[in-house]
Image (cartoon, rainbow, N blue to C red; front, side):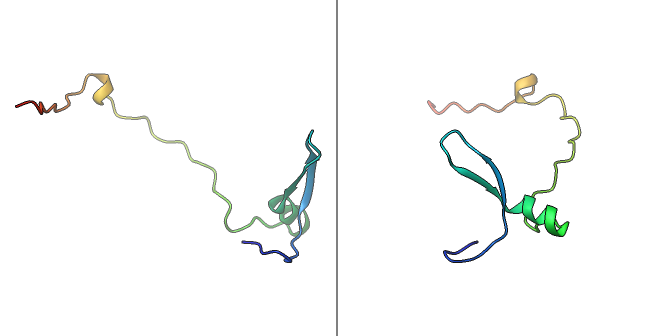
Length: 68
C-alpha cells in the first residue's frame, strides 16, 4: 500500500495515446536492485489432465424433481 506523499521508485513505461504515464514498481526493483517483490504471483505450473466422465461427458448426475 502506498499513501499520499510516499516516495517510491518506479520505472516509466510507455505513455498511452491519452497522454497517461504508465509506471511499474516491479520493473524498477528488478532493474535497480535485481530483486523481485515479495507479493508477485508465481508462474502457474501445468496441471495434470482432467479425469474423464464428468457431468458434461456422460457421467451420472443426480436429478431431483421438486414437483413431488
